[in-house]
Length: 321
Image (cartoon, rainbow, N blue to C red; front, side, top):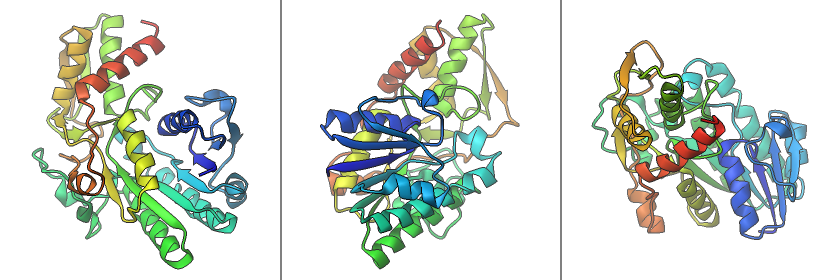
């Protein structure tokens, strides 16, 4: 590849992806995001940076022009607290992927990457904390997360049909709870690892000795460190894998265990207050990695304790504690 567009480059994963591509020696990188440049999590002066609203077709045409490979990481999204309360906003992201696919086709792009989500998986497969891991086939019959999950599943199909009808090579990755430094940790869009780190730091800073946990703390998840996310995303983009594939850790923990790890990193023990009325999502969700192991001989392998230690240190530095 000689030219790469990263849509959503001002966001958490997008910023890390641009940083990685630069290190790989890619010279012609176009970075696009809706946010003003000063609000991007990572911004590089040797990259062509643009503030564009990719819900608009003309903005997508401007972004895609002359680009061979396109990574679509752009979406209006956040953690469970955001997607449960902003379903319409999340679904409007369908405009981004639809218009960007149209622009990619017009521009003669060679490859198109779509960042999907584990939220596409059927709700009846996620009703117990002992989730055995979601297989790619578990997305159908369709019963995804209302709002955000439906948009992701629809956009997956759009990518498939652009490949079949227009010969645009598309790659679709289903992310499972990505976390790490240089991401959102407050404001309502943060995901569980960053939120827990922030709350532990705040409890020490404010000397409350307490932490609020959404739900009963027994709900289970797997969390993937950002380095594994970037490695998997770029290698899948370069591969011949045409069908949607999981990209997530198989290390499943409860939210209580996640808090345990964060407390261990901080060297504190906090009183737990459970908010049973807060958004909490499905009961149990983890990634079945049999397919990625078979096709790539690899799976995300950063231990949660190790990745969370780096994330905690970064958030602590940002909070100037």
